Amino acid sequence: HLRQRAKSIRFLMDYKGTSFALSKALEISREEAQVYIDKYFEGFKGVAEWQRNQIAFGKKNGFTLTIANRKRHLTGIYSEQPKISGYYERIACNAPVQGSASDVIAYAQLKIDNNSILKALDCHMLLQIHDELVFDATAKYAHIVMELIREDMENSFPSPLILPLPIGIDFAGNYADAK
Image 1 (tube, rainbow, N blue to C red):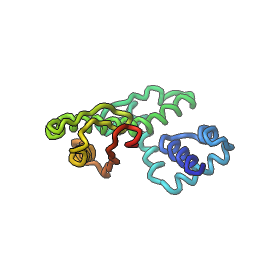
Image 2 (cartoon, helix red, strand yellow):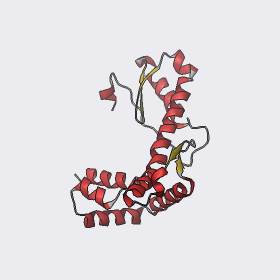
Image 3 (cartoon, rainbow, N blue to C red):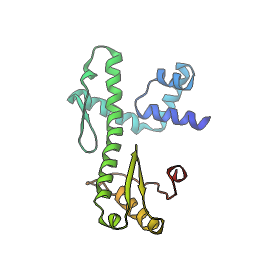
Image 4 (cartoon, rainbow, N blue to C red):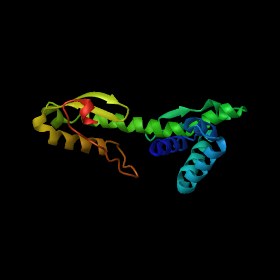
């Protein structure tokens, strides 16, 4: 129960959630939700600053950017209606995170698809589920395939990232067992 509560708080705060949204998610009062929000930002001051910067950039430019410089337009960020402008402020914080995750997985897919060793080992990408990729490969080459995929995924983005992006990887007879 506590773990789920913590995940809800972190998710909502990372995406500029409000005390109203948190109170609904946790079925608590808005006042109690605001206490959680305040404590979260006490511990993660950089998140609040990053969010302020994202919103300021969005208001100045009318869009936000992903890590690969894809634009998400924020036409409603100038609205006089707080509900609408607040929604677009949350998008200004959410789109760079979600969009950048999409950028990284797309680059990883391209790098893996162009990996001639994986092709020679008869490894095929079957499916993408959010930030997961599912492959079909021979068990005999599993350890080689997994290391090649790990290398390609962790180093797929063309320019160096500030932080490493370590991945989890597993081999199993089916998707459910690999999770």
